[in-house]
Length: 250
Length: 257
Image 1 (cartoon, rainbow over the protein chains, first blue to last red):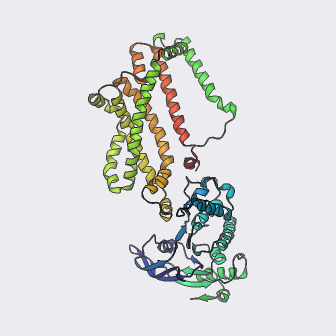
Image 2: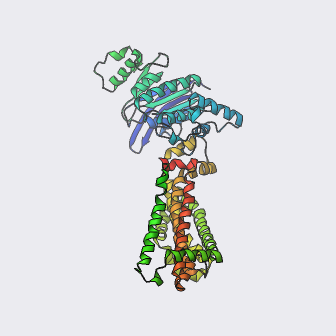
Image 3: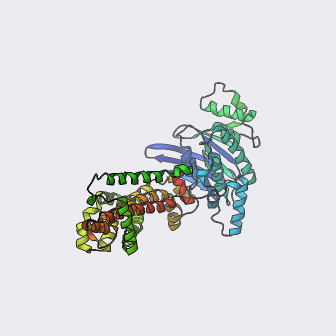
């Protein structure tokens, strides 16, 4: 595997006359956690669709190595399959049944839902469902995880808990991650690198690096600083200077 | 669609309704609101029912009717569901055929009775034909609608996890439409049961529909009512059987929403 498992070169996407991206280039390193934030409708989900190969860019190229899996914004568990059967989807390529069984158990343990293995999605809470979705995407040898606002439908406290869960899961199963979110705190708390997108046609208007280790407290000064810097970028904070202490590149 | 466990007293309520209905029936008969020749007493009907059971005629009629309904209904499902799936995936064919399907769906199957007799004579075949005509088009339309309403994210997930071809059909599309299709099957089976009675009255020499027609011609109002009771009870039983399908764990999600 190369050092850059995921990269785009001068990618443009047009829907008819609407230009969503113009010459967007980015490189994501092995094991890096990148968050993409931007105003709603700026094309964050479109970017993920391009990265996953679901959408062909109008021009430019996307290269990735390894297996890419996506976690969707809305309920995407198959409702006629139990939690365990949904996670097993991620292990379909394993031909050895005993090994599949072992890994399935391992994933259920990882998300702490052993007792809910035989429950159907509609019998689980929103937070549990999202944990199952994460487990399904992480199962098997996924290399790149694309997260499309995975926690946006959850209440605030559950969202905070799931962020911690995600960090814990990634510690056990390190992955290259691209998280698309409108939740700036989420980006600041989770990502190594944050890309701030502009309005359409979207370009990266700012790039921030957060170097402190995970898990990070929401109120850690660096996290707060990062949130401030992003908000300032959107013109939503008064004091422009506070964010300057975060290492940034324009 | 889900039912909470009912208190045993609540469970008895339908029985109370039955008893009250029988009492009203008896009262109407005792008061001679209608002439006795056209308004049988509950007792006479019970006797008639017993007589029909003893001679074995009732069972023979029941088997004949159930055979026709099952055959016509199964044919409609086996052809209608695939047709609905196919139309659900081919926009051009859907565009071409949907008006025709809606035309036939709106046409009372009873309008086909003259042709059914002229083409197929008397007996099983015309009844099966009429039941098929009654059920096929609604099954097609409801399957089509169910396919159209599958959330697109399921197809994304299916693609991500490598479901293709037959796997996609049997492990994603069919389970996704199952709850909606089963609901439509319940409605359609009820329709089939309505149609068989009408078909047998005109194009039959046996079956429950013929039995009540025969009873009317013989002025045996007790047997006529006995036939009506059997028809109603069997219709309820058919619905209960299909309702059981909605309790299957991998289908229940569609009703517990």
